[in-house]
Image (cartoon, rainbow, N blue to C red; front, side, top):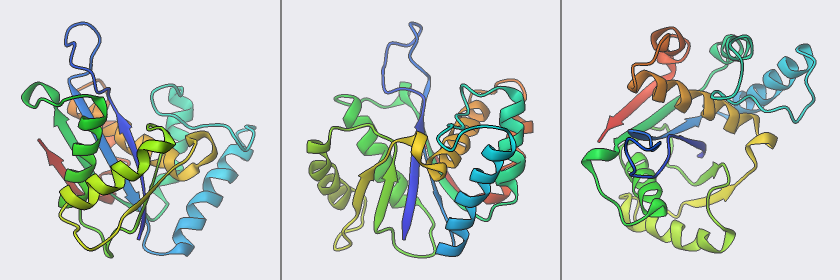
Length: 200
């Protein structure tokens, strides 16, 4: 099964100086290729209807309320599900930023509920290409997926409607975990698509 992942929050630990309290990862997935392609087509139609170019990026943290709710109304009708992990960074310590991301990703894969085993992950650009093999090895060793090779691929979120959907999911969850204004209003758009959300 192919899944899409995006993150929200940062991996720093300078609390009170700009670092976020939480670091989150969310994975989105589809029942079949037909639903996956339909999701892409629906987002492209929305961009066209709103007068945007094909490479316009729906990004939760930077979009206006009008853009957010137009996108949410669209994805509410799209058939997909998600799993997520929310890390309270004050309660855990990591060696570096990549370590935190990798540990979060491994935990997400370990606890997630998907109809088929995960075989490939597509996520926004975070690591250098040369670091990918080491990340794949860490996933294999730490996620409890021994014997089931998981390949990962990075993709520019501006060119991936599926990552943009994952971005909205994880952005809303971050807003919800932080108890920000209107968090429940946003969460209502995605809560029926939720499978498992892990708090650590």
